[in-house]
Image 1 (cartoon, one colour):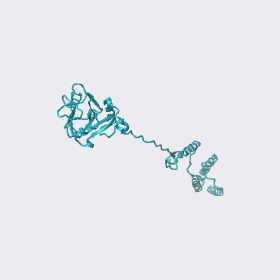
Image 2 (cartoon, helix red, strand yellow):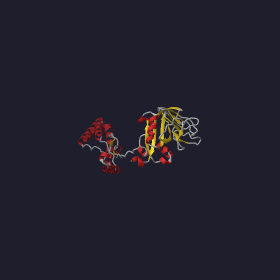
Image 3 (cartoon, rainbow, N blue to C red):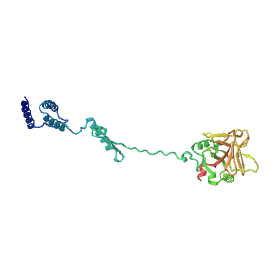
Image 4 (cartoon, rainbow, N blue to C red):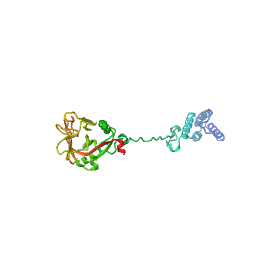
Length: 313
């Protein structure tokens, strides 16, 4: 019996050696290859029982021939998608494109790797309106007047000077700290004048008086019921007009300038324009205009008004 097995094994070995090796299976082969593989699997099982060494060589050969390159998935929809992207890329200038390629390994599909051409759109920066557009009648820079305060004061001025050009007659930043200089500069433009001051804590306040200022040797009040005082201490500007309780509109001396009376001065400035005081008064019915009754002055400005036709000439 053993001799019979040896003879059959020897004949089968010669038969396998003489027969041509089957072609390596590929992923694109027909289903016939799969049936051959199933038959080869049955034949290998039979040879394992008869001749183990021959089956081992055959299996190793099959394993080597069955290895193939990675597959790439591709569909018609994906091809149309790529074509559309290429058409869009042709419409966009090259200098406006930014390509970003995502690396991928051999097991990823091409759909995960895309070349994006993203157009960059640039819009002109919107410039904020200049102070001259917000305050068209302001002819000089101010330490205190912004767009909101300008509109508030412009609406509060007497009708005779509404719409006129604002002319800076005096500023401590330009002309020094002297009340006498302020009085002298007030004569440059007769008519209503707006005094604007501020404390070191951010409050802006002042009042309307008549120019030119005329110092009196004695305490004699001047002005009309057009005079008023204002403050921004409360956040929004607040105006206090004459109540009619008295006629203490403003007081001008060579070394002292004050608004209001009856109880306290609504606003008073000393000779060197470095300090001042404020308190409730009957003339305007106001509260303290500054953050503190006694304060240090940050700057003092006096504005006059002139019609546009006269200012241009």
